Length: 272
Image (cartoon, rainbow, N blue to C red; front, side):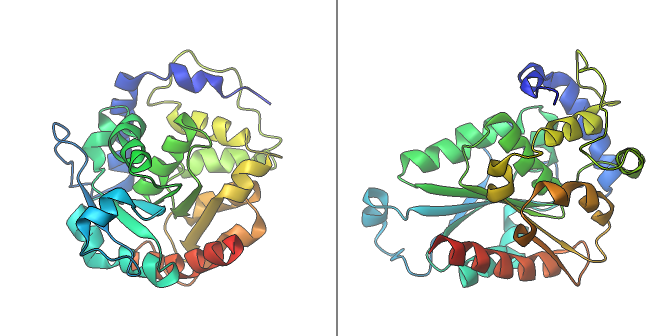
């Protein structure tokens, strides 16, 4: 299996232009964000926690945090409006939820994973969180995978809702090869650019085959009429079967909220 160590040599400037193309692929990416500012966040304390005692929470914070990355065009305010934090906490009442505003501009900077690590994940660890999950929909699902790619194994788990995983021609190539295992990605390129970004993402995912860690730590949900469903047949064999949820619905938060409730209920039950 080809090594995935090449990712540390990824060109951040090239990745910025790659993600500009991604904006066109996903269509309607209007929210760029202000990358000169820290990543916007909003902490939704667990219903079981006493959020009124701010001093106590600073000394003894809740131990469980779920970080949510937005989809295209989403903001922190929009994530709050669609109710994803309420959905997660309905399933897992002792979870704090951190809504983030990692809009497309942060991706186009070329190192959204590092900013998430430095500005969100590491501060959470310093505050005492011992379980940190990251979740995201569409663009946010890809961002969650990018974080895992650059900081492997640091998250307790990943919850993905219809992540963007590339365009149909590449998925057809993998299908014609007989699936991801027999697919031959070819030599590792010197640089990752607009022409091979999707291809190299799948090379990295190919490294998950027969590894128990990703299979046990990654959860996937999507609607049966989701516009990105075409990528799922190549991705789902990498995961445990009971970590994959296909339910009625489309590429929308109305679908992902329902999936979040069911998926986090299952996650919580497995941790007991």
